Length: 318
Image 1: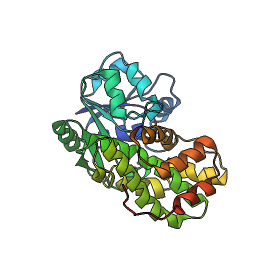
Image 2: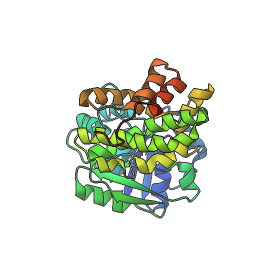
Image 3: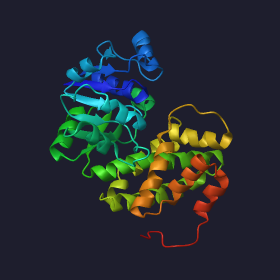
């Protein structure tokens, strides 16, 4: 199979490496002038992965779209619309969105953004736990492929599975996308707990975080149980505990005052979740606290203490 990767950052470079390591022909595309593509072109490496010689590199979007039987997209969630809107033509195969987030301002899921930009085209998402540093080190994990078309889901999952990643078939695109995006917000909260020396509260954070997002998923037409699967709860170890997690580290730096320049998708996602909370009439206390801290400058210790000192209520209230 020929696989095009649109994007040239950390996760995109891993996807190209993974495709090649599983015997696929891989081509990685980056924007003209992109520093990340320039680094890969010069060194075949970027500090995360070393690309085999078989991986082709290009900044020509026509060449990239014509190459792949499928196109894997790995750019920042807030860059997706501009990328897809600027394509000269549609990919010749399915589009697989390999990032997690919600569009800021609209609250749209990324598959909805793709549909608005490209119309009728097969679209799937690839989500779940895993960092390039672990995979490159030979540490396996499980992930999820999901789409509106079960046949496409099965075809992609079977084709992309390898010794490092076992794919499960997703059956709830709405829940899968909401869960995958929202886990980054919970990751920010986890990092702040670490920074405050309150790591022992992360177990409660996990339980309550999954519960509030499950209510939102159900209200949006998804299934509550999806949030307790790999897309959200199953990704907590990689997001709430891993030293490689950008969102956890960003939250921790918010407490310590250290600068943090890496992309933490959870910050924009928290803003989008507040829109969905209002639109759907669903209480999202953890997401609201995180948004208050990052968007409105609320004191973190006060905001987080409020989460765990709320008035008593049924654990599984609706």
